[in-house]
Length: 217
Image (cartoon, rainbow, N blue to C red; front, side):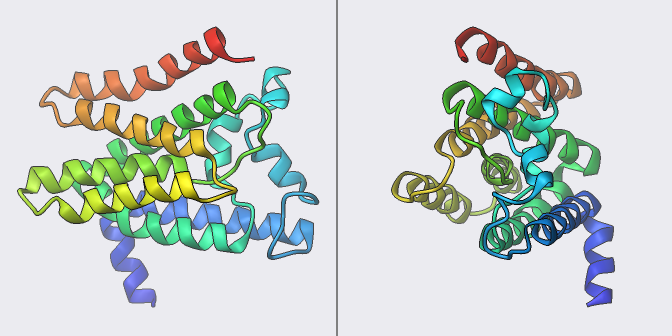
């Protein structure tokens, strides 16, 4: 296990750090709530990290369009998302490099968080799913750049989109926000110009914020 972790850290340090931070934060929340199945009601940490329109609008929790992506509401939610992050994040980080990967992850998380605030203002939301949807789209671009068979990553995206529409309790706009963010970011980072990469990474959450101010509550 130790050897595997060292190997993973050498190839995808940011993925491992984000995963570890999310797991640690969830265990803190579970300790506060004294529950492994529902940490929402009795964890102050969850309330401080989740994205929720009224708290954000008051300016009390301006950081939540990013912090929500590092918190999960139950152990099943955490397990699925961290498993997906370890698998997909490693491939995307190895391809784009750690600095660009971190920037892409943060940009996608903030953009999908702001879309939740805009279109689902009253729903308290937490989880890495929005950022993961963006990574799934970016994985398609990774496969395409390698000349690999695109069917597996495309099916992965399609299955998760279908799951979003047929399952209760998932954040529709968080998932779709991540999907849209992933498409925009993939179009930007597949260009040769580094300036274009950063224009997309920085410009996307800024555009999402202006969309929130124009359309939101």
